[in-house]
Amino acid sequence: MKKNNCKYIFVVGGVMSSVGKGIAAASIGKILQSRGYKVANLKADMYVNIDAGTIRPAEHGEVFVGEDGIEADQDLGNYERFTDQTSTRENYITTGQIYAEVIRRERNLEYEGEDVEVYPDIPKEIIRRIEVCQKKNNSEITIIEYGGTVGEYQLLPFLEAARMMKSKNPEDVLFVLISYLPTPTLLGEQKSKPTQRAVIDLHSVGLNPDFVICRADKPATSDIKKTINNVCSLSIERIISAPNVYSIYDVPVNFEKDNFGETLLKALHLPVRKRDLSEWVTLAQKIKKIDKEVKIGIVGKYFNFKSCKDTYISVIESINHASWALGFKPNILWLDSEKYEKDSSLLCELDSLDGIIVPGGFGNRGVEGMILTADYARLKKIPYFGLCLGMQIMTIAYARNILKLKDANSTEMDPETPHPVIATMADQVDKIKNKNYGATMRLGAYPAMLKRGSLASAAYGQAEISERHRHRYEVDNKYVEQLQKAGLVFSGVSPDGTLMEIAELPKKDHPFYLGTQFHPEFKSRPFAPHPLFTAFVKAAKRK
Ligand code: GLN
Image (cartoon, rainbow, N blue to C red; front, side, top):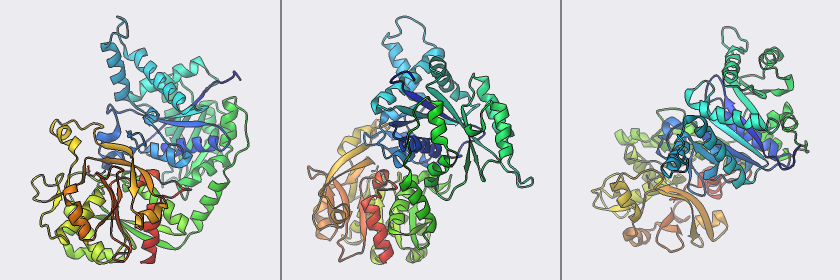
């Protein structure tokens, strides 16, 4: 092996999307990391958006926020949860970013009079960005996941970038095709033809997969492996089975059943080091054995499009991590807040829950139902956890019902409200007026100081915290004194004392009634559940 060569693994999808490419890419990172390699995961999305911040989560999945404030595809969350490494803006690229940079350079005469072409200038910029990510992370192996599926027009410049890298350093670059093997019910057997088509699509752009991961309900049969081996001229050990598993945290362990880590390292001409996945094996076994349930209701409104699993993935995973650590199996119910607006008698269905979460959100649809929920949870002493919008909601509910400020609201929902307990942040006013929406919220990690003796400080066990944010509105300081006098405690505040980061009711008044202006869900890990989620699930189970 040439010394210090950086290695690259491209992960591309075949046949169809939503087969768990992100989990597979994250798991590849994990199994190589577990063998002592420094890895980095990068996501390249095909859309022209500069980032995911302007994309509707109900259709495209959660917007994941990084420490540095990047608003990225949800897969960065998978990478963080699997490899326990913090992603940065260098770990995320889009077609929009690539074109914006090429056009910026062209306007600055940096192409020195040459005409700028889609080929090769776009692939070249993609390669530059992949290398920037490698350098920033100082990774020995960089795993690049391409969004979309082979055969899509917009993927072509990205595949070309990969081909260029491979032709320059064939020993340092691998292609992993993740394909789907359908099992038509009438036949009851796995079919490989769609995967063969995907391989042919890759061939047409000058690429052959080095590995094929077979996603399917069941493990890939040996017949199927043989057929794929014929089409791709791949040895059987390079065809990896990826059947449905009990939890996503089984995937790295499952990959290793096919010795994927070792075969990958050999293919990259890297020494095969011993792996240590023992805590993953333990976790995967533990999850399967848990039978005691905790019932959590998520009251929100983004439930009518795609699967809620994608829209709220970090919230779901945070509930999972905390529940598993405490020995419970979460049962999550999706409750559409709009129905409570139409008929408040339906709120009594919340009685059967162990705990309620009102997650983040934008715009006023469903908000009145969330406010009713927050008040109901307070009166009925049902543990309540508000995430960003959920904290604003509980503050509004408190102002309306305890301070008797009729029509109290957020200026986001009602710009004319007589009592804007949640108001537009000062630096957001002009941005909103000028429709300057892209990447302009209060984003990323900010510190907060915790009040001694509060639920929050007991949960964290420390006086200062740092959490990730994504919002334009905040508690208006004009109302802080009144709200505090009426019993609401602002237990987390920015170091300069001006921004309310956590609101809660004292334990003597309610078992758990707490909301955060930030998004704790982005920092929960399978082996380090977020302390607030742990405290919430504990309270829920005590109910
Ligand atoms: N819409 C609210 C705001 O912008 C809450 C944002 C969120 O929940 N992420 O402040």
